[in-house]
Image (tube, one colour):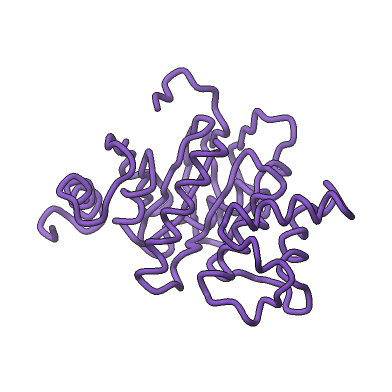
Length: 247
């Protein structure tokens, strides 16, 4: 998909974020078109999660501005965390319906929650308790909860980081499929370079609160782990992260 003429889903203009004397984001400029899948990579402390929290409206910048052209502003953005954060006293469908708070309730909320559970492959688990689900299944519920309100922007803060390798690859395929079907803008923070290349249209590498590399991933989908094409992009990103001599 070409994004040259696509309107912006959001834009950061000279955004600053400080915690005491430490500058986490330093004049960050980033514009992302509607429908693009962007992966944010960088070493710990580079500002990845701070960027997501600002985008989701969970934090405010100390300088610069964040532009969200959509009518709903931060309300049109949802965030998915590494931990599922499910309510243990609520059944699976009720956990998904939490994403409809202030949007829908009653029979409509129940119907929409079950429809999303079907999309993530859990059509028969709506009446179960979260405690009986596997880790991958709990993350599917968290994904359904994040998407049930039909957000324009989905932010993902290492949501697959705690999963085993095979479940992680399976979840990557699910996430890509749903993103392609629904057309939302996705912003994924990850430490997994291969995951970024397989999923994203574009990989942004942060270094000390600034963009060190902004790389378009020009590969057809679906992409496959271990392919020479994916490996070539991985090496370019790793070279930026660790220096040319490290690759």
